[in-house]
Image (cartoon, rainbow, N blue to C red):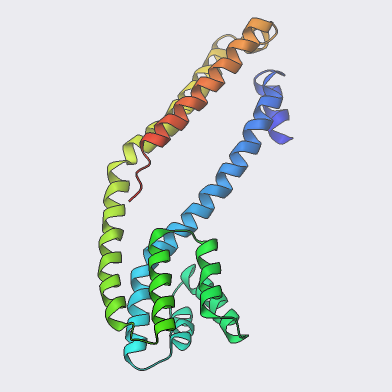
Length: 217
């Protein structure tokens, strides 16, 4: 509602509902971004988690105890997620179900590999120390690779956001130079169609650039 009123007063009445729709889309995009960001932070903590579990199991601790210890030692989000797993294990839930729920909340290849290693080792009753040691090294390498890829693509990511910002800035500049220009333009059907087409093209450009910069490591 605030975006609707602001856009209607600053630009033109036509942009009120457009701004409201963009606000709804932006809210959903922000929530997805926060969810992805939290998952990324958890993935970056996986090498440390694997190392803690390896040290704990090598010291003779049970896997359930090692998970509880890791939950106490690690920062969020890993600490919070592992504490949730530990609570589920404490009330009698199986390791398979508790860890499967964790992979559902934080989907990632690295976590799936770690969970699979823990579950299979728990079923077979064998030692997990050597597997976790090797997995720790692999996760460290993947972490560095993901960081390098993200750094290399940072310019492309900035371009994706700069394209629609430039369009919006040009529209504001035109309205500032010629007050009421947007109101007169959107007062005609052809002007409204032109605005809608331009918004669609800017959206397509943003999505295409983001797709080009998305590399699955």
